[in-house]
Amino acid sequence: MPTAIVRNGYRYDGESVEIDQPITEQQFRAIERILGEPPARFKGWAERFCFDPPDPRRAAALLKYLREQNLSHSLERQETWTPQAAGEEMQPREATCVTLAPFDQAPSVAELVALAAHLLLSSEDLDDVVHDAADEHAATLNSEGLDGQIEYLVARLGTKDAQAAIEAAGRREGTLPVPDGEGR
Image (cartoon, rainbow, N blue to C red; front, side):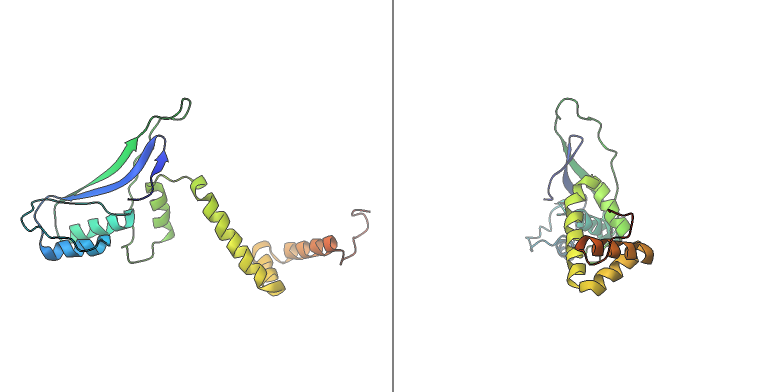
């Protein structure tokens, strides 16, 4: 089960896919592979099958497979509403729909944005991840020495602003004289 996401009193609990007809053992095994589940006992006599994909990408892959196999099915998004503290917004967010690349392919940026919306994330939910990634990127750049740092500054700021930043760093370190009128 994915980590619970809470927005406006609603906790996202995942999705459930129900197949409304008998399926073959070969189809059952294909579904297990899509969902990444260990083999289970196939019940050929069953008239319905219910699966709880572990994440939205696998749910999308399962739905695609079921359409390709022309199997009748339904999808239910599971959310739980919990009362909020007084004064908090009580309006539920509009339901979102997401289509993702097959689970074995890397998703595009647009698909990841759709996934975040589907999970009811806000920009604040990714703040720590972005800060960690930026810190790691800065550490990598700094380990490349002056050449790497200056290349980055030129690419990010342009040559004139990079020059100004380098000169300002030189003044702070006392290796560049302070021009008249600045700090004297």
